[in-house]
Image 1 (spheres, rainbow, N blue to C red):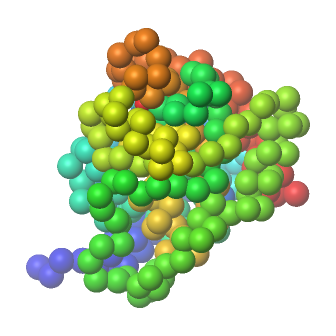
Image 2 (cartoon, protein in one colour):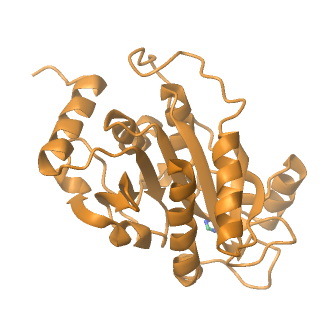
Image 3 (tube, helix red, strand yellow):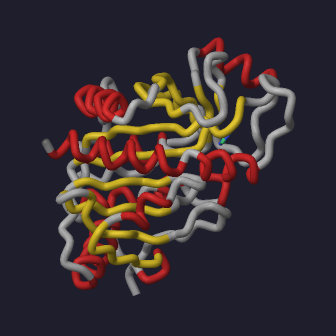
Length: 277
Ligand code: HPA
């Protein structure tokens, strides 16, 4: 049997989702390590395990539920990816972005992404929320490698304003509304799964990074390829290697992400309201 094309796969996945629920999402969300609670809070919620969505890769990491949750935040129809897959799980770069391409195929013209990250900026502390205003792709790969999918976008997509300025301004207003001091900075994406060495963190600081993580950048590249507007926030779950006294481990990442749960959920809800207004 001939292998199905990406276009067919996305259509099959979209049709499955739209047959299962009546929500036609306008805004997509990608909820990272330990940050999935927002997806459980939406009204009129339908949850689809990734395993039930044709062609959707399923996460293997703790803190990533692996469900698409559709519903409403305020009045706005949204689709949340509760958990994502990462390069270090062994997926080819293109597979990492199937979920966000599906969000676009479902009709989302805006996607808000979140992640857990290590803080490099000395002013940060665990629990700081950082609006991402640009990134460094140090993952060693790109989800657009290989033949271009012309039906999605151009061979050489522009990345000048990858993080939409208007969405960033709205995130700041949303933070002010809830009395949150929102930091801002550059996110460096590495492949992982080992955390960085202190020497690598010094290198990243020299390169201008304020935070470091193992996700988000492939998704933003794929979304900009399609022309979807992106906004992104990191939850600083730990100070990066060598900056604190502790060694790093994933349970601390999940714990700190969990501790920011309420404020993170409020910020996302407020951000969506500003976008809708
Ligand atoms: N480094 C890379 N990824 C991360 C970190 C970190 O310190 N914390 C959470 N995700």
